[in-house]
Length: 233
Ligand SMILES: NC(=O)c1ccc[n+]([C@@H]2O[C@H](COP(=O)([O-])OP(=O)(O)OC[C@H]3O[C@@H](n4cnc5c(N)ncnc54)[C@H](OP(=O)(O)O)[C@@H]3O)[C@@H](O)[C@H]2O)c1
Image (cartoon, rainbow, N blue to C red; front, side, top):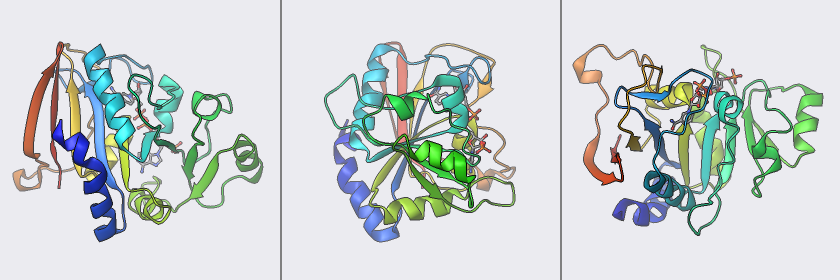
C-alpha cells in the first residue's frame, strides 16, 4: 500500500513542520467496534494477512506505543516478527510505573523500552525499571489525572522520533482521538460481533460538526478482514 511506503518521508516532513511525531492509530476491532470481548483480556482479532500488514506498519514507524492496561492484559512484545524490517522503539504510557519487571517489553524486546510516566516518580520503582535498561520519561498530567499526551509527543519529537504507531488499548485510543493527536487511522475490521470493550469510548462530541471524520478514506480486503485507512486531520 502506497501510504506505508511513503510514511517515513511524510513523517519526517510532519516532524520538521510541527516538532511532533506523525501519529498512526492502528488497531483491530469487531463489526460492533469492540477491541476485545472482555475488558482486561486480550483477544487475537486479526487474521494472518492483517497481522502481516500490522508488522509491515510497525517496521515503517520509529516507535510503537501502548497503554499500561494493554501490557497487563496482552503482555505484548510490539516487535516485528512476520516481515523483515527494523523494530520500532517500544513505548508504554504508565503514569504510576506499574509495569511488571517481567513484562515481555522489558525482557524480550531487543529495543529498550521507554516508559512515559508522571512527574516525580517513586525513586525505587524508577531505579528498578531503569536497571532493566528502560528509559523513564516524565511529563505532567492533565486535570483528569492522565498524562499530557500532547506534551509527550513534543518530548518524543525532541528525542528524534518522526513517527509513532499507537496500538491501544481503549483509553489510549480514546484520548488520542479526543485530543486530536492522531494523524491517520489504520483499522482492521474482523467479521465478528463481540459485544465487549469498545475501542472508542465517549469523546464528548455531541454536535455533528464536532464528529471526527476520516478523509482520503481507502479500504482493502485481506483474507476475511477489511482494512480501512485514512487521514484524521
Ligand atoms: N484489538 C486491538 O487492536 C487491541 C490493541 C491493544 C489493546 N487491546 C485491548 O485493550 C484493552 C486495554 O485497554 P485499556 O483501556 O484497559 O488500557 P490502555 O488504553 O492500554 O491503557 C490505559 C492506561 O494508560 C494510562 N494512561 C496514562 N495516561 C493516559 C492517557 N493520557 N490516556 C490514556 N491512558 C493513559 C492509565 O493508567 P495509569 O493511570 O496507571 O497510568 C490508563 O488506565 C485490553 O483488553 C487489550 O487486550 C486491543
